[in-house]
Amino acid sequence: MKPPYTITENILQLVATISEKLGEVKAMHLYKPPTELRKKNRIKTIQSSLEIEGNTLTEEQITALLNNERVLAPKKDIVEVQNAIKVYEQLNTYNPNKLKDLEKAHGLLMQGLIQEAGKLRIKNVGIVKGEKIEHIAPNGSMVRGLMNDLFNYLKTDKDILLIKSCVFHYELEFIHPFIDGNGRMGRLWQTLILMQQYPVFEYLPVELLIKEKQKGYYNALGKSDKLGNSTPFIEFLLNIILQALNDLLQSQNRTLTVKDRISIFKDKIEGELFTRKDYLNHYKEIAQATASRDLKWGVEQQILLKFGENRLTKYKYKD
Image (tube, rainbow, N blue to C red; front, side, top):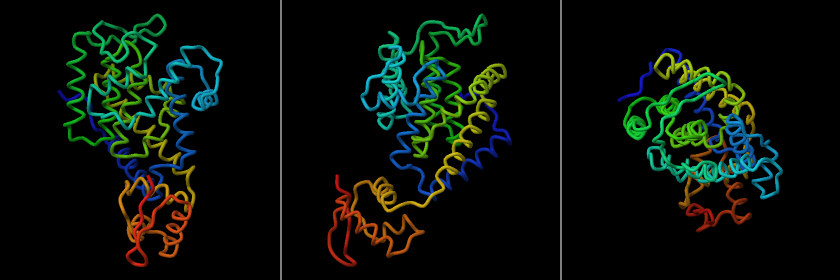
């Protein structure tokens, strides 16, 4: 069964605007930000997603853990961060369309925190906030079937990926397939779904904005629960994604250096031999002379190998 939701005019407008922004990101070669920015954004993502769940570690403490330095903090909080670091490092190894990979990622994310890490729940659960039962999740005996249906929707439905990623996020929270860790898994898996088509999402700290609008996040979940469809949640998350892209474009309005261009093109060419013409086809905004200087610099820095001379010259990135 297809999860219930309605594609409103607001959703269509948000998708159109986000698509325009993604085009700008591609044109500015920001789909893979410079190494230092990627590292900072990864830290912000981990810190924000875990803070939503009550973790106390700061960005500075997470940076220290990444650098294998000692941190004084509750053991549980340290384990949560160490697990999240491992999961995000392995993000590219998971297939977003496979339930087994979701279970595998949850196993690593919750290792040493709960006994049922990596296992779909078979118990019945309810989500309690204060003295109020906020949400009664589906019966434990239904979880695997519901998750199989959800992954089938993700793989086969023809709706736009931006929308499907939001629907998946909401439905995972509604089904509550694990005893614990569902919130962080929903946010993680939406990132994984999106980055298959839009690489920029691997380094876009959407979780930071969700943390800043945490009340709105939970309100959107609650509103969707009451309506019986994910439409309000889709609209909320698309607004968050749009803001994250706007923030990226505003913060990275810069001219690429030769080092940036050579680094970005490495991911594009994926180890193949290439010519100056191939390089120019990727960077249409630079002159032939600039391309020649870039490639010469790459060879001098021992980043590139050069084969042949003049028009027959080809290049390859060193392994």
